[in-house]
Image (cartoon, rainbow, N blue to C red; front, top):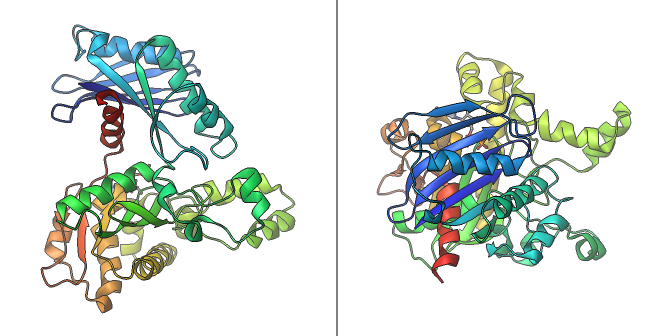
Length: 399
Ligand code: ADP
């Protein structure tokens, strides 16, 4: 069976068509500038030339129709009939406190996604538009919503509750949700298999280090704790997000600058993190270069990044009462030997040892970095959120 995976943003739509027989990607692509002049479709069929076209897409429904047209095209296409698409899996950011797992989209699920617009204002509206566009363009197909918050629903109250008055949890669902859930879920389960850990009891810490960054602790693939909170702002230092700050910082900056709370939140989300500390860029390649050239801001940024990360690893190691494996994933985790080395050097006191040659040779591929005598296994496992969504979607159509 073939599964279409969609990830809709406010003006974009990323897609992959995956053949679940062998989990190969038949085609992937991107619609950009939906609803904006200059919309463009880039379609990459496996084994064929990339096809790019500038074509008006007034909304996501038109975009979905164009994607299907590209998939069915006699030259650039990879399928002969729409019937070959068994189901559609949608990435959805926020499922609120009632959705704990992926589900087939129905009126109730759409209501929940809509109810969570306030919690995911940039993503949830676009995710719903994508679902409704597919319902309109391909009536009768099963649509499955896979939520970025599902993995975090494994946390117990002591991990997810904030120590604030109960009424805010009851009335507004103010709690820690965690994000990058599809990635943490996928990578922690892959780690259990790849590193031959006990599928029920294996204790894994996953460091998802991309532009957005988060860390999770899980037992047998069930989330025990994860660093993002009510929104993806909490936790690690990220490309442009501050991660943890004293909440009073918000009030202080807002008052001092005479700006609004929304303005300050915008600063913490978009103008902070590694970009702010380094003064160089939010991109790790630029920061690493500046670090090596002795740029003192880049050095501070890198040290602060590592400090925050190892602080969380230490905390999670305690929460888990010991760790079987630490896994690096996403852009920096998969391609950044320097960050991996700096983290593992910190952990030497715990008996963590890695083979630096292997570390230096590992870019975007699965690898065990730890030496056989390391107390904790250390590995790189590339994340694959699209495949995770497709696997989850398949479960529903096979039932
Ligand atoms: P997101 O999906 O959150 O946008 P990614 O997972 O694609 O982010 O990660 C992007 C980050 O990965 C960027 O900071 C980029 O610099 C970093 N990255 C990519 N390649 C390398 C590399 N070779 N060395 C260090 N960092 C890298």
